[in-house]
Image 1 (tube, rainbow, N blue to C red):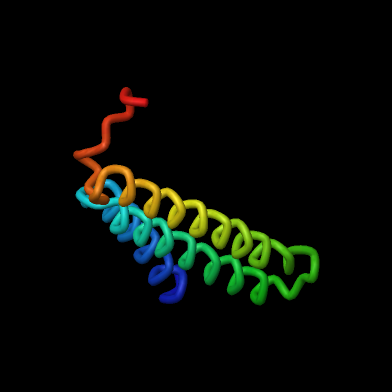
Image 2 (cartoon, rainbow, N blue to C red):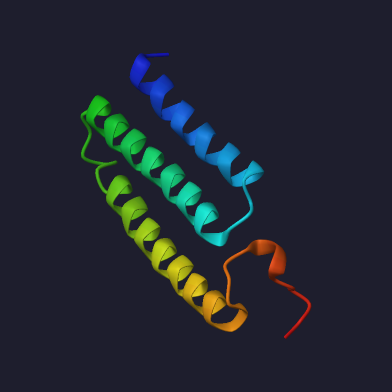
Length: 98
């Protein structure tokens, strides 16, 4: 495993661990998801450059587009949660309450 692959694997794992263990606020969970998506984007970009193939050149841009859609949906949920509940703490949310 090259040092670049090791670095991107570690950043993805750190984002995953942050998402799993630090679930106090919705904003921290969204930041961990963005870190994971950023490490995947850079890894796919390097993979495309290493293969020297134009067949896979659209996959990093497609992943970046989905990441932007995910970020906008997450921020919309964050704003809606902060307006209705007054906080973004995940413990104050009740999924059974409509």
